[in-house]
Image (cartoon, rainbow, N blue to C red; front, side, top):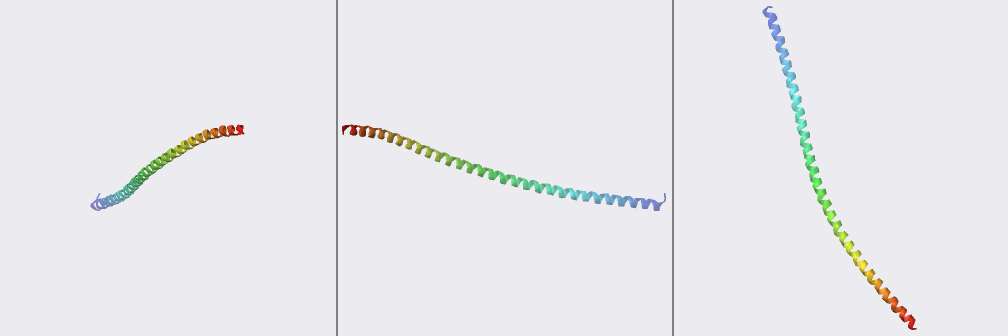
Length: 109
């Protein structure tokens, strides 16, 4: 092999190495871009999860407040029912007394 052929061969090898280096850098750049996209997606996901967690906490607090209000109103309604039942019982007793007095009055006349 003469010097000219050796030089051509080395030149071809050098071109192959340069192309391989360019491909490697291109692949690394693509990987860097993909990793950057993954990181951005992860950050967005974490932000969404944080937001959803805050909404969940707010919803639970609102639900607790509504449940407490419902419980309070239920107690008020039950108290009104109790008072109504007592008044109906007194009215019934008064009606019995009135009926007996009216019957007695009718019998006198």
